[in-house]
Length: 87
Image (cartoon, rainbow, N blue to C red; front, side):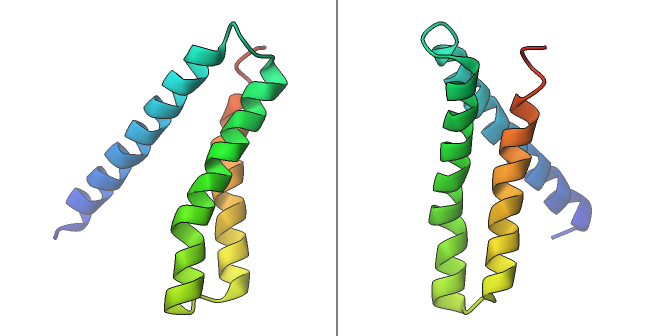
């Protein structure tokens, strides 16, 4: 498969995930505080780590350092964009 096609598919996949997360946050806007919404995003990203990263470490023998770094990347990249919204 061509690199451009793979890159486009990856972008669309990430965008779809971000839109779904935005929908979840939009449903909680009047029922929770800002901090609780940020913690919700963190929990969702942690769920993604457990579902996608831990099996790579377990079944395919990915290095622990890689798994921890990639897990941190998931949590930071999904949680950090939530901070500027209420400003």
